[in-house]
Length: 247
Image: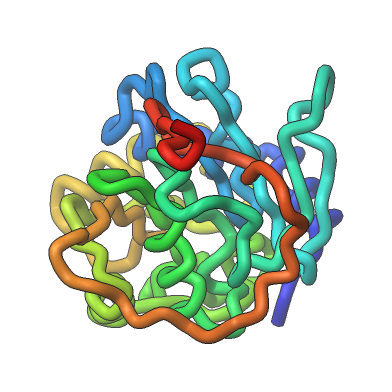
């Protein structure tokens, strides 16, 4: 079952959504402490996790799949969000340095094609963090949160998906060990649940948090698709990119 932009925004406005955002943002920050000079892209509904990086990255964009809907981001100033076909992004090959996937993989009609598109737009040596519901966790079994919608994954399934798209996982993490219950007393102990779960390596975390890097030593199969893109300059170019065709 898919979920739309209204439900996603509503969830992150609740105390439970705030807790989830804080725990997952901590997991992301533990891997990426500084994105200075980099281009950052979020796909799915990644805006809750992009804000802290805006002052570091030279450019941050939020792409939202057509079936989900789009909202303006950031809430003030020029918009950096766009509605897209997640399998045919309006970006040049190798044009972003970091990608955050949130509420994307589990909603994709073809996770394999989505990951292939991520490989295409990621720069050589670039990295991606994918947040995906854990098949063994409580969050995937309860539809009171967005993580209870779509397709959950096991670690083995995600490993196979990454390898198929020519990504090399460099870190496997889990988050959201606290049950998805809206009781404030329980939510106050959420950080303790996560510390306890990670220390013991418990299998019932709500989500997987995987960091992977792009392999460039082997070609990836190119899908024959028609890209309905306007002629002209791409939306983004990789950091340090030089247009050699004009020299």
